[in-house]
Structure formats: structure tokens, C-alpha cells
Image (tube, rainbow, N blue to C red; front, side, top):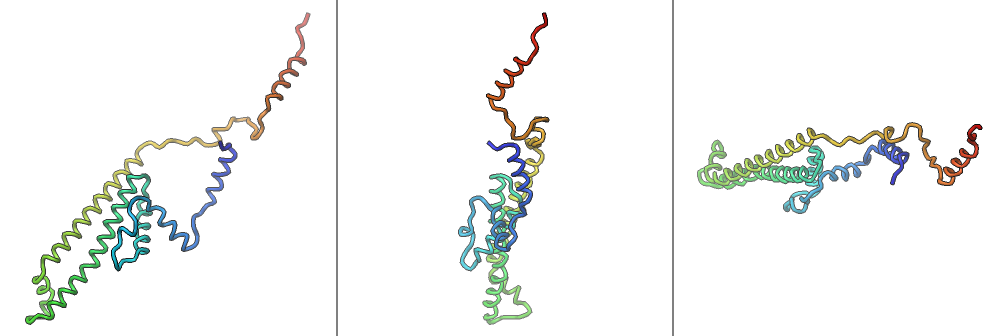
Length: 200
């Protein structure tokens, strides 16, 4: 069991820690906040950068400050939704580009009307994409709202108070001095021999 002096020394040493200083250390520490079940391999698709996902996930997790397993799960959901949303938002201009290329090869191509023509020839694809984007945005907002609610409830609940080290120590105790049983017995014996007897 740690002594009070050791606990106090540990506390002072902890105050000296300022965290990682190198870019590599900071990058590694950023990922520490992302702890639960979702891994980069399960989130990325061909053409996506795993390191970009790790940086993105670490930054988002760190900004949310999850404090327990339930909060970590919600942060993981938010990371998953946000990453998929980024993917779909990148896909939208690519879909438009493909539709425009197909439309330009048509017989009745008109540059003034090419956006309308592209949408007219494949509206279901773009509408499906918009439904997906809206659905992911809604799921992200729900997870963020649930996280905010949990964190607010945790902040309102009373936290156990840790007493200060000074209050744990007896007021006049000499740190490091514990009398041995032999010393106690000898001092008691000397007290009885030196004590004056009853007067006659």
C-alpha cells in the first residue's frame, strides 16, 4: 500500500507531464481517444486512406471527450456516420460528372441545358444519393444528441469527493516514525519505575 508521502510525490510528478511533444507522439496520442469496437480496416473502402481515417476518427473522438463505454459507443457511431457522409459527398460530384459525360454524347446535347438533361435522364440515382445523405445526417445528429444528453446527466450527478492528503495525515504525526513494540514496552516500564510511589 502506498504511503501518504509516496502518493503526494506521485501527484507532483503527474503535474510535470505535458504529454507528447513530437509530431509522431501527438499523432499516436490523438488516436488514444478512439477506444471501442470500430477499426479503420472495417470503415474504409478501396481508394480511401486508412491513415486519413485514423486521424479523422482520433480528432473527432478527442473533441467529444467520451467518459465511459456508452459514450465511446456513441462517438464510434458518430465517426462511422461522419466518414460515410464524407464519402457520399465526394461521390456526388463524380456522379454528376459521369451523367454529364453520358449526356454530352447524346444527339440532342445542349450545353445550356446539360445539368437539367443529366438530371432528367437519371433522376433516381441522384434522389437515392440525397436520401442516403439525409439519412446519415439524421443518424449522426441522433448519436450526437444522445451523447450530449449522457454527458449532461453525468455532469449533474454528484461525483465522489477525494479528500486532500493533508486531511488524511494526523496533525502532529512525524512522517516516517513508527515506534517499535519493544520501544513502547520499555518506555511504559520506565514510566512505572520512575513514577513516585504513594506518600505514607
